[in-house]
Length: 214
Figure 1 (spheres, helix red, strand yellow):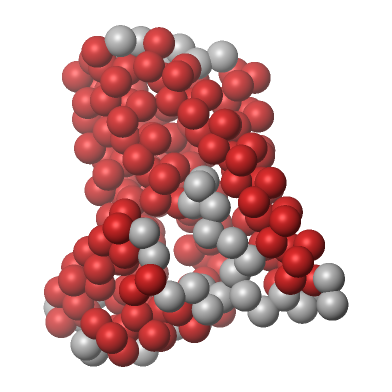
Figure 2 (spheres, helix red, strand yellow):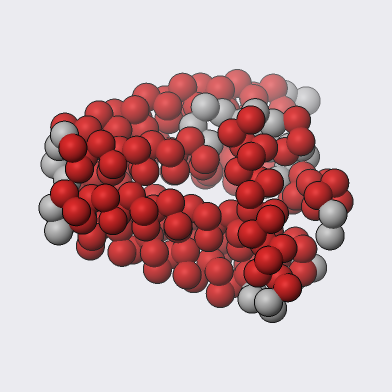
């Protein structure tokens, strides 16, 4: 499957959002997933296997954190690999023609569990528990709002906010890397996660209101 065909199919599965017109960060992330997904597809690796591998890597992140500074560096690497796996499972599904409703649900649940693991790592690195809980709850609210808006008849994704998945991935990775040098970096990263979630929630609320106004 060529990139143009992949991008069009990917767009149809993501509420009409075209990755070819996205920001450099999002576009680059989707293209990376396309390249890796093509490689895995040629080796007959299934999308659910990739999702499971990514979730397993996520669950190792907080476990690595308790090992101190070397563990925090390892946690950052694990978070990066998990994020790559998360992007590649969808790519494998699209390229191999194996997209299913069950796979979509499984992938969404794995994403939320993975983010919970990253935030748990921030907590283990010294971030106050209340900050971790609020940041996680508000970012999860985005996905819930999208799901409810879709059920209510909204046909498009609504908005690509400042707090999308690639942004949360970067906050997690750089937060863990920073914590290996300066412990307060974990708290700072969680604060950034929360701030982005607040702004993103406003952006999404405006888009949903506009999308469902009719």
